[in-house]
Image (cartoon, rainbow, N blue to C red; front, side, top):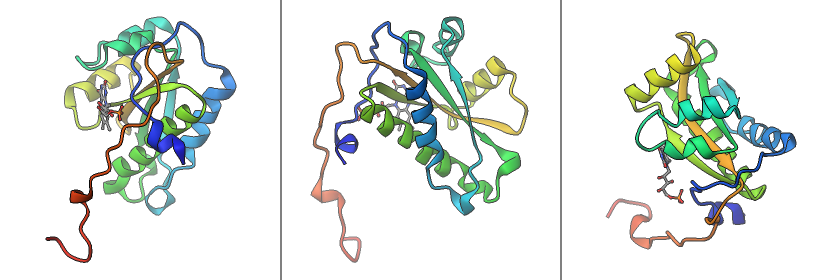
Length: 168
Ligand SMILES: Cc1cc2nc3c(=O)[nH]c(=O)nc-3n(C[C@H](O)[C@H](O)[C@H](O)COP(=O)(O)O)c2cc1C
């Protein structure tokens, strides 16, 4: 599947909106992800409003480019839906990667921005959207048509990281 190999984090975007159908495709891809006990506890906020994108870009020092994205998707876990609470971050990670791969397929650029392991970013996003206690921010994915950056293959295969039958 070429999207796995060609996907790159793209942080420069054209000033061009993303078609509604493409945003829906990204969300459809997210919701096809596997999840523990099929809990599907994900929810999403799609942000296209420039003012809100500006606010999201101030989440931390790694999120500046979010201001220039055409859309940023906030990926959330709803703890009221958890059946296997310890697995929610794994589930969200699978959904997030699906969004990145679908974005690559749709010739969009995207980046995963972590939230869940960063208490300050978590608080910032909770406050920005006035989220209830059961709604847990996991990540942002910023998306846009790439500008001077492109999805292209980098070979990361490393035989030294593979162990057969035993660790040695
Ligand atoms: C859990 C996670 C958190 C990340 N957080 C950020 C972030 O906050 N800001 C950012 O610009 N990139 C972020 N990235 C993207 C990584 O920097 C990027 O994937 C890595 O440098 C490899 O480059 P590639 O995505 O082009 O293969 C994150 C990626 C992951 C998986």
